[in-house]
Amino acid sequence: MAGERQADCLFCKIVAGEVPATVVRETETTLAFRDINPQAPTHVLVIPKVHYPDAATLAAAEPGIAADILRESAEVAAEDKTAGSGYRIIFNTGSGAGQTVFHAHAHVLGGRGFNWPPG
Ligand code: 5GP
Ligand code: ZN
Image (cartoon, rainbow, N blue to C red; front, top):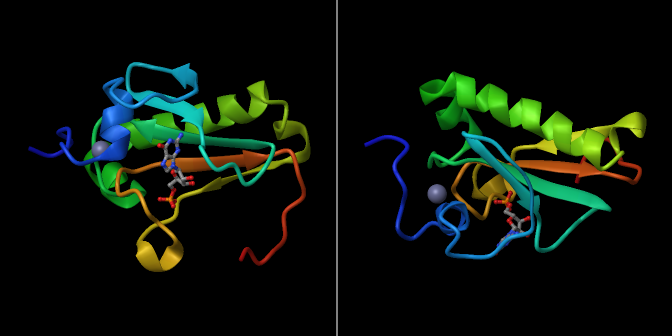
């Protein structure tokens, strides 16, 4: 069934507590934890507890949870005091765009300057 836990999914295992993570925020529908390979002083992943392969499929099936991801991303940025100077929310979608974990997640990056266009 849509949204069900996938046995071979790293982020489903983090949600289940089977793989450790540095959790910074948790709600009924979302989990936010620090990226293991940070690309900025603030680099937090905000994920739905349900499994969808990317942000678009999550939004199509569970628009309320997709909105929760955005709201929690802003809370993460505010708590890490990065929001004052701005932050980025990034959804890599597809391997060609750098997606490596196929459980929807927002990268929240802050605490440094950013270039445009992004790399
Ligand atoms: P993607 O490349 O799919 O957009 O993002 C996946 C992210 O997950 C990467 O930034 C990577 O560093 C992070 N990551 C991979 N394995 C782990 C892990 O075991 N724990 C945590 N906290 N982050 C991970
Ligand atoms: Zn998953």
